[in-house]
Image (spheres, rainbow, N blue to C red):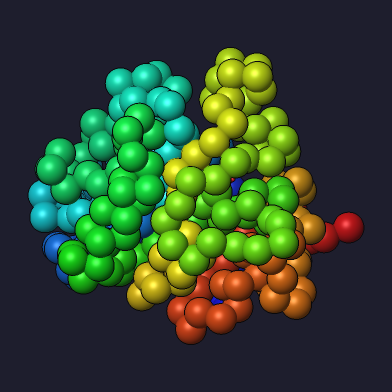
Length: 242
Ligand code: PGA
């Protein structure tokens, strides 16, 4: 795993935005895996800025987001789909038909997850997967526990994940749906390249366990040690465990 530590969150966000913009310039048909959350907001702000400044052409790019809440439609203001519209999709010339998202209102979630997995394979796989990390070590919504799901699946969120997402629901954790659909561990690990971003002291223990700890389902991110092309982009606080 390559570790890159930045003095400030802004420098991290700018470096990652440049990496993604350059990847699109090098390969206009880039297949990009994308996260939601508080951490990537600064990155998306930079990515919009760089895309406009460098006239990056998103028209042939495909995007796949990691996860979505069960029960929320793409029109719901609290869906991750809406988060992405607000922070990125509305500001770049990505084609609507190239935006791939798990449908939290699918009548048959198992089929929805299978179709998502198939769509990733049919397009030739994800070239560059951007990830955040939960304070509990999750990636996507692959929650710590006795086991991990390999493929895209329906998951019950842990209390900590619901609390950590309350900010997106007006601060009320009760409003955070109890379940989500998420890419699985193997879905993430079959991406050609992975960049994980983490900022702030709350992530430091999870980051340390991801980099140096044993592979354990208690820290799903530790499985990134198996992948040959992972970069962890950290600010100084996330890079400094207690
Ligand atoms: P955060 O979420 O950026 O809101 O901390 C990261 C994650 O849970 O993957």
